[in-house]
Amino acid sequence: MYDRLQKHESITERYPLFLEYVKGYMDSKLPSVSNYANFSALVYDFFDDVNWAGFYLVKDDVLYLGPFQGKPACTEIRLGSGVCGTSAQMKKTLIVKDTSTFEGHIVCDSASRSEIVIPLIKNGVLIGVLDIDSPLLNRFTDQDRETLEKAVVFLIDIL
Image 1 (cartoon, rainbow, N blue to C red):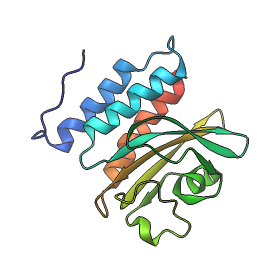
Image 2 (cartoon, rainbow, N blue to C red; image 1 turned 90 degrees about the vertical axis):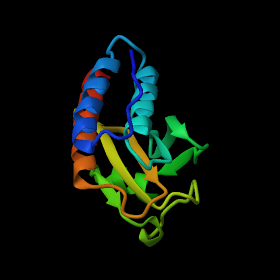
Image 3 (cartoon, helix red, strand yellow; image 1 turned 135 degrees about the vertical axis):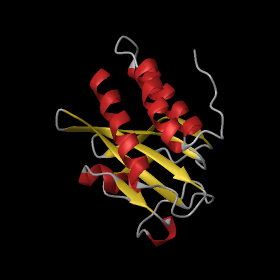
């Protein structure tokens, strides 16, 4: 059962707990959509100052909107376009401290000021990206990246 976090808990307390919850809620017997949905809900709740968290899943050369938490979003992003498409094409995590400085940034929510995108790669094949936006500049840290990449590895393993 999920217990909502106390916001006074520090990141050093929260992030290991986040990873425990990811492992507890991800289930290889469930359809992928269920795992994506719970994963995005956990990110949205555990990470402070996030206004959007979710997935874009690849088909051909397009990322299509998957399960997410937040306001309605762009439904299609071409590989190589915007932060998500660039991360997907490069197969590399991107942290953008100020989205207004990222050439080709796709504005889905004008309130988003910084972003982290982690590619989902299974057996060398790109299956999508995890996209997280914040209304704050310079929101995402290396500690966020490390924690999210660990969680994504676990998610990929059970898909």
